[in-house]
Structures are given as structure tokens and as C-alpha cells.
Image (cartoon, rainbow, N blue to C red):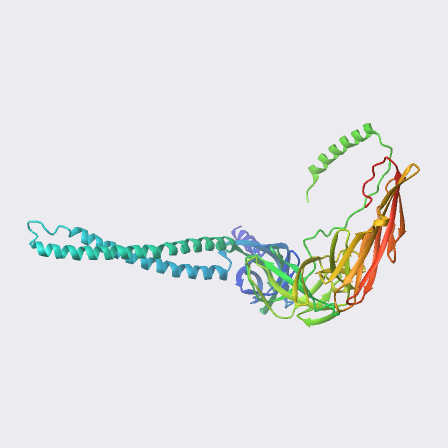
Length: 527
């Protein structure tokens, strides 16, 4: 009976798999930075033993998305049984370099402060000695009056000297104390950000032979991403616009990315990947009583359901571009170090020469300024995403603009700034500005002269945009009498002139329209 029980226990224990745990050093090899997340690639190696093992990768960011974990081995004799992530509260991440620098600076100031305190204590000790020996003229002192006077003079000189030195030390200590307090506050702020628990990735593996195994580990982390930033530069209206496409990479994952290969991706794995489902739309006769009953029924159904719910041209090679089905990836050619401090690190992606047509644009009814517009054709081939752009024209900073490639248009228009060397005038024509009564109607006539003066030495192409009122009532009639070379959009009420004006020359045209409406009727928005 005892032998049978022993045999059963041996069989039971033989079926229980045991895992010998081994910590394995790993490092970040590459990072794929998405717009609001990043995929980390870690590499390491270990020597497998026959049977089961538990491999622990330490120093993992607590910002990991555990469901994104991927593990690959380079040896078919070792298989992965399970993989999981857990926080390690006993070991924080590697100390941040900023914190180390602050700690060193604080230590030096504390040493200096301690030296001043020692000097102050020494001087106060000397004051105590002087105070204990003030009684020089007692019966048993043995000093003559002359000696007492001399000792008093020495006491006075020494006392005043000590007090002077104490005041000097106090002046030195005060700013030092402020510096120490400020450094401590800064260090506490940095430590609060970086002295957080790290994480471990625990792998349970089984091997049929002892081998050196390389681990390739990938996972996604939060608190990282990038923002696009553009520089638009033009040397003049005869040159194409040069676009510098940059990525401002940031991360606050608690782990520095040291000397890593960086890929900047326009993808975003955090977006909802579920396609929208279009349900049938049923048309029916409105009945308030039926609707009320249906709403009550829906409320009952919802409660019941909740009970069961469970589960161009490229000028500079700073990155290579690969266009995938759902995103565009920029592989940065040089390795980068991105610290976990939340600060933006600018990385150049590409520089393009963009086929550009320059045209001036003005709306003199609203503003007599003339703006230079750069129109870029075939802009969709540059794989841009919405972002801020700095504009430089003829070597000067002009301002900023927003690039929004999501606008459906054949060309991308960018305002390069105001040009004061082109003058525009819009003046009423007196003989065509009148109001008359015709029968039971009032007829008002409006006329304007448009004048462009090109003070530049080179020819320009310019658009002038103006408008006519649009009637929203059949009793108000708008008639365009004269428009010159303008193209008229009746739907929008817009008049658009496109002129070529030679250097140093002027050009003039006019437009006239009238508005007719019943007399004694107040009409607005007609001029």
C-alpha cells in the first residue's frame, strides 16, 4: 500500500513542469514612432537548457500595451509557452541624466554651504570665549588699570572683526540657500517623473537542446509620438518652393532610447480599427403613442442586454521612404538618442523641390493688401499630414501657416506673405453710383474702378476678387451691367480677374451692377 502511494506521488510530481528563472539583459535596438504611440524592438540572448525555463527581461517601460507583445526566437528547438508583463516595484528605471546632473550640482552646493556653516560656528565659538572673559577688573584679576584698557581695546577690535565676518558669511549663505532650495524642488520634480517602477517581461520557454538563443521582442508603448513640422523656403518668385519635412519626436515612457534606429510612421495603432456598420433606415408614419411604447420597450431591452454583457523631387537623403498599404514609414538613416523627458526632438525626414506657380491675390473690398500665393501642384505625392509650417521668403522669416492636405483640391495654396511693392485701389465711380425711382421700384446702381500698380521690376500675375450681392428674395433683382475681363460666379456672387501686369506698369478695369427692389422697402447687403 505504501509503495503504491509513493509511486502515485512520483508520477504526479513528474507531470508538474518546473521553470528555472533567468534574468536576461536586453537593449532597445529600434523604435517605430507612430503619431501617438511607439513600437519598441528589444534584443537579447540567453543560453537555453533542456526542459523548461523562465526568462525575465528587465527594465521594461510601464507604459507598455501588454496585448501588443510579440516574441521571436532564432532557434526552432526552443518554443514559447507563454509571455506576460508585470510591474516591478522593487527596481526603478535607470536614473535619468537630468536628475544625475542636478544631484551632482546639489552636492557641490551643499558642500559649500556646510563650509560656510562651519566658519560661522567657529566665529560664534570665539564670541563665546570673549564673552566669558569680559570680567577683567575683579579683585582677584591681577590686572592693572592700564592693562584692562589695553585688553578692552583688543576685545573691541576682535569682537567687531568677528561680527563683520559673520555678516559676510550671512550674505554668502543667503543666495546659496535659495539655490539649494530651488535645486531640491527641481530634483523632486524630475524624480517624481522618472523614479517610477519599471517592468519585467516574463517568458516561459521549452527547449529540446542547449543552444544560444537570440530574442527579438516587440511591443507598443504609450506616452510617445511625433508631430509634423514644415519649413517652406523660397528664394523668389522664379524659384520653386523647397519643403523641409521634419518630425518632432517626443517620449515620456520612463526609458531612454539610446542610439536606436528610428522609423517615423504616419500610422496610428490607437485609432478605432472597427469599420462602421450601416444599418437599414426604416421610413414609417409618425405616431407619438407608438414611439413612446417603442422607447419603453427599448429601455427594457437595454437593461436586459446589460445584464448579459461580458466580454517631386528629392534634394536631401535624411531618411528612406516606404509606402505601405495603410501608412508611410520614414526610416531615419542616422541612429538617434531620444531621452524620456517629454521634450520634442526634431528629426529631418525629407526635403523636396515642389513644382510651384506663384500668383498674387487681393480682395480690395476687405483689405488693400496684396498677398503672394504659392500654388503647389501634385502635392498628394509628398505624403504630408496636417501640421504647422514656418515660411521663409527671399531669406526672411515671413510667418507661419497651417498645411492641411486633407482638403480636396488639385493644388495646395500657401500664403507666402504680404508684398508692399504692389498697390491696389478700389474706388467708387461717381457717375455710376446713384439711386432712382422707376415706377413702383427703387433702382440703385454701383460702380467701382479697380487699379493695380506694379512697382516691381519684374512682371507679375495677380488675382483680384470682388463680389456682387446675391438675392434671397424674388422681389430683389441684381443685374451685372459691366464686368470687364472678370469671370462671374452667379452662385457665389464672385467676380475674379486674373491679370498679367508688367514691371513698373499699371492696369485698370471697372465693374458696374444695379439692384432693383420695391420702393419703401429697406434692403441691406447690397454693397
